[in-house]
Image (cartoon, rainbow, N blue to C red; front, side, top):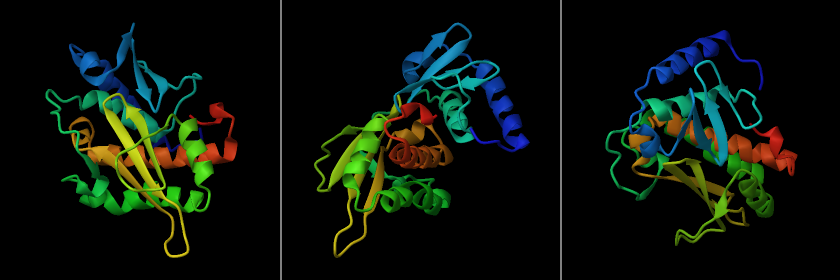
Length: 213
């Protein structure tokens, strides 16, 4: 992981202290996580991350990026009492509180995927599988539809149309509407950003999975 500003270390320490103070009664079942001793195991895009009182580690024992660390902590801290059952799929901009982040989401999540994989739909399919995606059928006409399990209760779906002679490549990421009950808009946007980064990294490093953390 690249060196990050000291303020990120302070932010992460505060999040870890808040997680350590959580009353976890009923939360592992509600969130789909596992408590192992004094640590909590959280699946993120198919990889198990371990959150201990003093650190977060990926499956290789390395510290994940700040964005991933924040997402994991907030998923635990924002655990809803009643997340509801609304599984309708929506675009990011359809969330009620998304407005301040919509442009950033497009620029850091959807557009990088479109730009990086334009004319390379097979490479995109391989990259998606590399980061835990599965080909899905949402009943929507597109060139490629892939489902990801970002967090146990937060699936993400990618709809992709490759470039042709009339239109540029286009990528849309969809969430279940109830995802907003589990995470705030900033963290949902960061999930899209992380997915885009990992897909681009996967394109560069296939078949070396360990380069992505």
